[in-house]
Image (cartoon, rainbow, N blue to C red; front, side, top):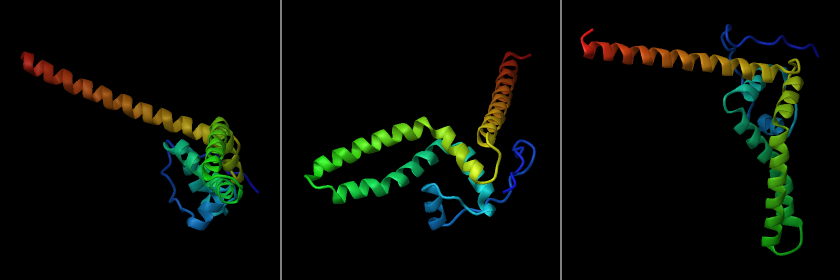
Length: 154
């Protein structure tokens, strides 16, 4: 599979994102590969401002099946099964959060992008957001200074 070039998100307009349907998204959340037409969406999914929350949601989807099986099939009182399931969720989320950048990079590579694309794109987006915020604050400070000068009669 040929690899895609690293997109420059600061200069080019975003391509039309084609979102997967519920069944394909479920497969993607479980770790499956999506067709190439969804590659821009995978990049968006792993680099948007809420990428961490999206990762946690995918982790919960992955945990749903084994936790459900523990709650249904393991013998014993329900509260014991529930506590075991809760402990499993906490442990799994700990590891999921610990390896979050590596997991998202793996998703990006499976979508056909070079390794490191997600991290580089997130860093560029963060820099662009910081520049916009800095410009917004400078403009607000200039407006405040102008109002102050107008009140002082200067």
